[in-house]
Structure formats: structure tokens, C-alpha cells
Amino acid sequence: MFADACVSCHRWDGDGRQTPHAALSGLRTVNDPEGLNLVRILIEGGKLHTGNTGNTGDSAASMPSFIEGYSNEEIASVSNFVLSHFGHVEGQLEAETIDERLGE
Image: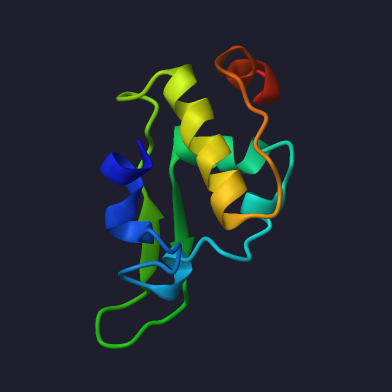
């Protein structure tokens, strides 16, 4: 799933392709053993306003929601991959715990 959905923005090394805001290494999100924030971002997507106004106005880095195209099992799998490859924790998420961890 990471190869199909994530690598085009985050690259295999986690450095981020389009913007430094897409970098995964060193983020608190990928170092959280519970993985709650990571799962929430995968499910809800997100937009980060960078404050860089430049010539085009406020720049925003955005991450799409993956809730429509992926199962809880796939979300858990990619979360565990990201946690273990770009963070310093072993991902322990399971499909059955995705909704539970998000309080849904």
C-alpha cells in the first residue's frame, strides 16, 4: 500500500518529494507507539498551512483521506509499515482496533 498510495509524495526514504512538510522521518506522528495520530491522518486526510505567502498566497501541504479506498486492514498495515520504517517504534495496529482507537 505504501508503494501504491504514499511513495509518490513521501518517497521510499521518507524525505518528502514536493515539500519538506511531506517528510516522515523524525515526526512525532511516526514515533507514537499507539499510532493514533497517524491513523487519523490516513483516515481523515489533512491540510497544513505553511504561512508561506509568496506570489500565490498561503501555501498549504495537503494529504488526501484514504478512508474511501482502503479497508481497516490496509490502514493498519500501512500504519505499521510507516511506524516501523520511519519512526522508532514497532507498529502494533490491527484492523479490529482502527475504529476503537479513533473512538468511533
